[in-house]
Length: 199
Image 1 (cartoon, rainbow, N blue to C red):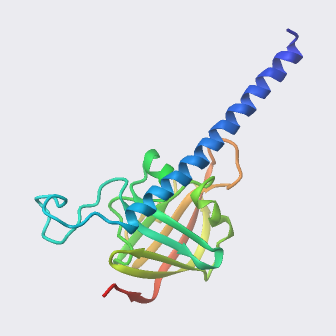
Image 2 (cartoon, rainbow, N blue to C red):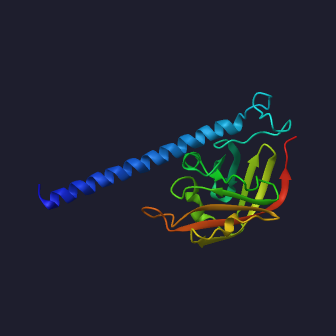
Image 3 (spheres, rainbow, N blue to C red):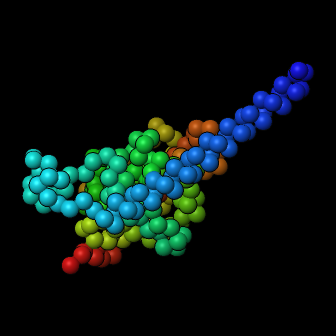
């Protein structure tokens, strides 16, 4: 086999592998959202069996991978289900709420991360003034985009605690990039408008 033929074979194999990985990621992201939606629409009932013994009555335990919110961006016709945790497994299912940050609607910094090549690809089109709605079993919370910015991975200001109700959506940047993207894209939003709680 000549060097040219060998190179062609390597390129074809590499291309096939990338197609396989991309297809697998898209399938996993879709399947994960279907499962997250099912869990969100049919939550586990609050019973002694499903409540941790150390938790006060009525307070649900949130485990990694649990669906914690539905995220909607009306102008972009986007609806995503947010899961708890930002590990590899959780982010394949959907955008992940960073444990230890504020929950939607609470005072503090609510941080949600997602993959740029699946669930959070839509953020490339978001802009200042856009509405972001986070729906939980506590109600619907309207956030308004204050600004977007591009930062280095070492810049962790988007994770900083806050005394006001804020939302930071984080993904890798550039959106179209082969390999590990070198920067981060951050959407900063603040709680705005009324909170609608279920009756």
